[in-house]
Image (cartoon, rainbow, N blue to C red; front, side, top):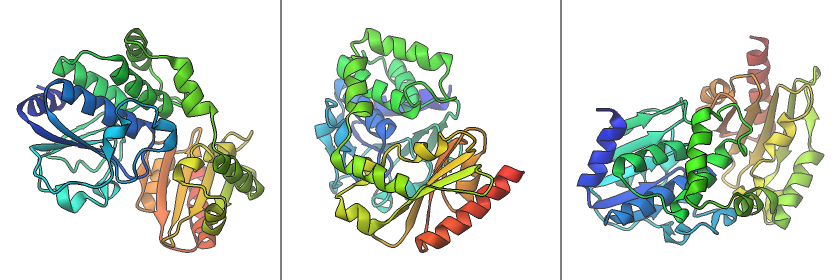
Length: 318
């Protein structure tokens, strides 16, 4: 019996279930929480869906997003399903509260630290949404249009609208089943990829104005100061995708975005076509995928730029 089958059986045997994902949630995190949460409710379970940073505005159209809470109730749960989360520190601020519960860890990040009581980590999955889809099949849950839409958002965001190299034959086979279940791709594309808030556009303008290249033009990076982000009222979800503007320049091997945060740390997003940026991020306590990763440095933004650029240049040479 695979670990995913064991997880399915454990969910069937549980009644009170907490479903959570990582801080600063993306489409895969939110879509996976909603899909699993709604499915477990269909099975008659008492489900609590939690996201420390809430639901980004672009995903609020998803049915079930209104059920996601940002303050954890003082309750005991039979188990906790942690989705799309590579390490315990990505489940802050609630890890101390949930660590003694029965943790089910479902993820696709190759850097996952296997912190669960039962772990199912599948790096070949394009998104955690693919894993949730497989889990729902084991649970025998009928995929409703609402569940299908949440899963489609999870998969399409983590594959860059099916453009990234993690997109597989299995990805398209799953997506075909989601379309058959009632997904409307044109609505999702408009809400998730096309519409931009004013702060998001202003943040992009700021980032592009800071665009800098290494001498050989193989590295491109942008910086965003916290004071500027506060001034234009830009939140984390307004910065989604900006780093790709650096990566997608002809000749660039690694694109980076350095974002100064209110607590004095610097959040770094790394993207590439061929370089293993997960390895670079891991050296700074972060993680992610080979072509898309992130980390945080407890230093000023210029020092962060210097340290990360040195590591990136070293990795490109190797």
